[in-house]
Length: 235
Image (cartoon, rainbow, N blue to C red; front, side):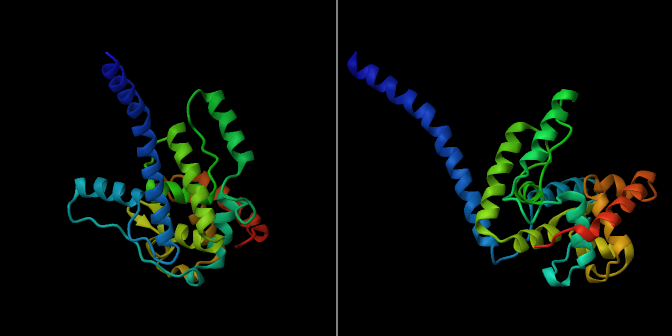
């Protein structure tokens, strides 16, 4: 009887321990992968794999468009535009903008569903590298953990360099260089202020704006970002 009770307690213990150990193993994988990317460029991200699967379901020959370029070969206009549009406090925060998260939480409560994320550039990179496009508080929690790992292991310039090279700008279009060539036929280094502002405004919904490039909202928001770009602080 005692032996049976001991065996039962052992199973209960492992029932609690296994999920914890699995969680820690996943976090260790993320940590080691980010550590590798401190001085090695990512070749593929979770969002890229997801999009490739969608595109190749339609046509097996379709491929993603992405060309890695160093930070110094990306227009300062685009850097300023993205910070102005996506994360004005990027150079100051430690990966999380808690005020933005609070506003997003309040908005989601009002709508009774997840409609806003309040994500920083670091959080967006965390999602792009490792997570799916689904919206849930569980995924948001994992995103926060990865964001802190990114900020702890990398400096702001490296985080921004990777982001600029892997962020989605349209259907199958990833990174600043591919976006500049897809939309304007020029390199990322040659983007003017208006071109950069428009690309930055497309980021929250790039596939939609790839199909609706003459959207009135896109034009109005582009003008607003153009006015804000001068105040954007670069890493």
